Image 1: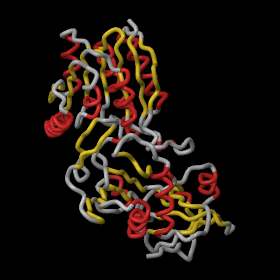
Image 2: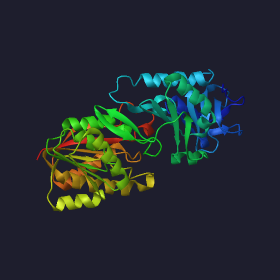
Image 3: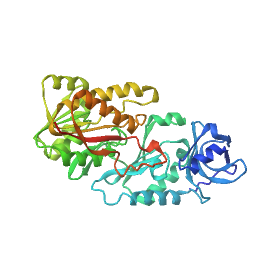
Image 4: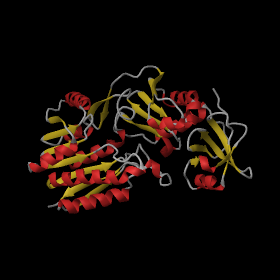
Length: 391
């Protein structure tokens, strides 16, 4: 199948054109003067005087009307997708893992396309109506570039509702199993491509798990919001005991399976609310050589930022009080609406209130398989720090 751009171009304002020229691939509805109105897909884009600006994914029901694919005029067909996907995969060469992100949407110049590898399988998300319209070309491109054993579409992200698209999980090519055993620097765990968070696992923290393990002390470790135990598994190779905490018994059950997969017997799995447990541990004057705070997004909209900051401060303040002298705290936020500046201001305030002196060992973001673009702040959602207690 070959997809060609619409004959009638979409005409955008000078402000919209300036966004592309400034390095951001989105043009919003308010900056579109004239659009085809004949459904989503790939369109050519011009300014009002007719100057060609590029080709883009077009979503007529979305506030983000246009997502830039190329400034050129070349055919956007299956071969085009194969070439872009192959280039993105080549940038991931040398990763010491069998599960990682292959395409990070805007971060790889392929807006609204997310692709993750789990061993021989590919799990993808098509997150815009324009991309959904050319699904078959994208799938053909994946097959040509990567030759995976099977492709699963995890098109159940809530963002698809803004595009007027259904939420679904679809076997696109072959069969991806319910669980896939993958390896990360010698640690094995089970990913759940059909039902797990995101596309089956939290791949964006892969490099951070290795960083924390490299700094972990030999004593006790505490992993809060552990989910399937990804941090806990890496800590178990260094710590005498790991306490892995989550509010979901189902998630912890998968963590137990993962521990057994590695032969680890030094992880204690606890079903609990992290806020309540932190208060209880503080009352009992317990301490840990290593503490990991990897909570879900507390701010999913701008309106909830203040409340989110209060929540982040509380868990960080209490976690800081639990870190033994010389121990480390890894803490992060995946809330895009909480900026790095705001997050680090919160950490400083928490340290002051906790009465702790904490050295900044590393400022962290997502792994290099989740590239962040300087001109696209939306690609930089994950931020955090590795800290050492020096008192």
